[in-house]
Figure 1 (spheres, rainbow, N blue to C red):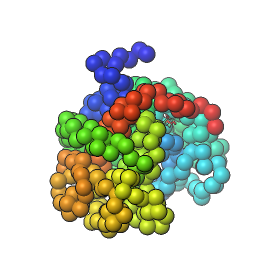
Figure 2 (figure 1 turned 90 degrees about the vertical axis):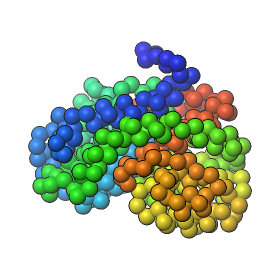
Figure 3 (figure 1 turned 90 degrees about the horizontal axis):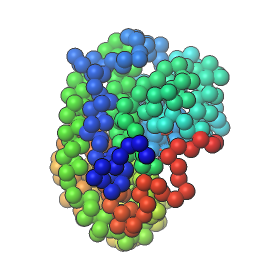
Amino acid sequence: EDVEKGSFDHYMRKEIDEQPTAIAQAVRGRADDGRVAFESLSDGAFADVDRVQFVACGTSYHAALYGAQLLRDRGIPSRVFLASEYATTAPPAGDGTILVGVTQSGETADTLAALRRGRSEGLRTMAVTNVVGSTAARECDETVFIRAGPEIGVAATKTFSSQVVTLTLLAERIRRDVTGSHSEAAPELLDALSELPSAVGSTLADSSAESIAERYGDSDAYFFVGRGSAHPVALEGALKLKEISYEHAEGFPAGELKHGPLALVTPNTPVFAVATGAHTEKLLGSIEEVSARGAPVIAVAPRSEEAVAEAADDVLWVPESHPELVGLLANVQLQLLSYHTATLLDRPVDKPRNLAKSVTVE
Ligand code: G6P
């Protein structure tokens, strides 16, 4: 590989560590003077947008879920489709629809096919990608780069953070073009974005994820729950763990536990409760549900989430941050958890069986 591992045992661990830099690069020059601007997009570029559709796969799908929620919270109707399902769902679209493909590589066949389908139906298309010159970047009407630098580990880590940060800026930018002003949240959000690299740095300096991996490394299955923006974080936590450790892991919206997944919960299935973003108080009920079945609960939470932390058996702490960004810090803890679980099991972390960095067949 052209990129060196340096002192790290694995590219994945190196890339987890690179997140402060990657995030700073994604923000650099794009949020100066309290206004969001992208080098590739003229002022007012989204003025006519009345609906955003995202297509993506895998980790990029989870980043898109996070981004769509930010847009909806700003009054812009947004939906996310698994790219492989876009061809079968025929979602309604009109002149004001923009179809955004979120794809690290810019080469995922399912995502390219969905973008091509949208384009053939006259939709405006945009790529949010890491790779300059990629097929998605070349074929879409517009491109925004996430600037994460090369990612070698098959399991996406730093690119998830860079995608979410870029989509956060994009949500503010679309909102400004459509309504004439940034959201009320913007000043605090942009400040928090500039402080995010150091918050990620503090999260990386915490060694708790390794102890939790040791404590729960012999479990039957692992569940991850969250609400709102913590839901994509829960999904991503489960995906990362299953990809590189081969352990059974599932993510659910916390409220859905009682509608089925609870049947799987036992004293040997730890439940990770992601307590970030809005409505975390509602997690308490979910924690009670699983605790009553004897499952250990590990909260992933900032210190301000006292009630959730108290109800849990263990806590993976994250620094305080803006409610719309703190989920990214929880995700960093869950990346570390997956990494340590996989290394304890002696798995080939950078090249998990049956998986490819970029899947170029539909
Ligand atoms: C593969 C990789 C995943 C990745 C997904 C989407 O399945 O193993 O890590 O999230 O493709 O890739 P993309 O390049 O489109 O983001």
